Length: 443
Image (cartoon, rainbow, N blue to C red):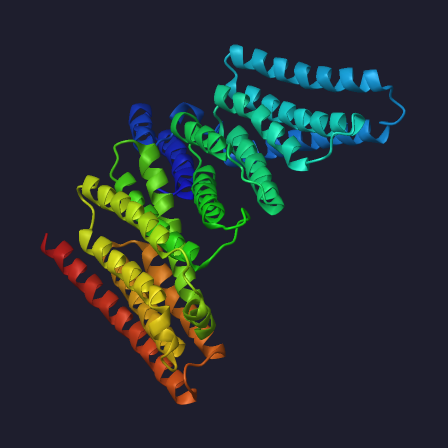
């Protein structure tokens, strides 16, 4: 169940108990089914956590601004001692709260202490003129927050540590250096996700950070001069990674733990969204022209990486007992066809209007995906799939309105196809609802 629906369910359960519709024991069982704590429903509100975090954030900014305004008037020894004392006292206060059992309060104090710690690094570097490589300061800031994240594995601290690590990663990448210790922060986020708070946002950020680090590592590995250069091979690997994420999401949805099912839903949903966005991009001729004109210089290495991803995909499909293998194989075939098309750039480059032909096939594939999602939503009663399929078709029609394929006659024919799809889906929905009503009446 999605987080927004869980919050609604929590409010409804409270009302059910107050109205006597269910007992307290039944309410606890319902909450346990969806990973909610009945006795602390209000304490886990995300809005409250965000407001408190922002409050501590602005407290930190206020103190940092106040210190910075009077920085030059403070003696050097007092500056150093004051920064160390402020950071140490804040973190010790947080540890005291943690020992007393107030883990959420301790996490907020740790969050504030981490801000003071980062400000101390910046200001101490200014005192002793240690600004040769700014990314090093961000690295030590992120590394200093990691122990407190492991002590109190909460969403707030996990997101703070990963955000700092990503800033360090991008700073290193922009300077041409390789962030070799970035997997350490990925492991810290994985620890929070498995042992601490459940956070779809942190989970999605961790997956994207992992993908970027893999792509950047390959770019460094394949480079001739040691500087990262993203090539067409990285596009193909990202698409294969997206397929793997979708399959792993299917496997996680079948886990017994609510945490795994929640992460599986997030992974499946967003991998599908990214794949649809990529298909919309490729529904124009220009991206196909760029891919056809690109040269694949690391074909063997790319195939080895794709083979590893294929083995992982096969393992995920094999482990998932109730997975829809027809959809999985169809998605695998589609990805392999796309990779084969890009690999055959030399053949396609000699063909006239190859990009337009591939553009037409991509638009037809988008229509097919949209229709399949609409039918799946009607058949299973999943409104998210139904409306996502409609959005896919409408966005495709909107794009074709501004970039007509061929000529106006071709565009008009395409719009007629869209209209037929919509009316056919409506007819299918009415037929499905009629059958469902008849089954209920006969029962």
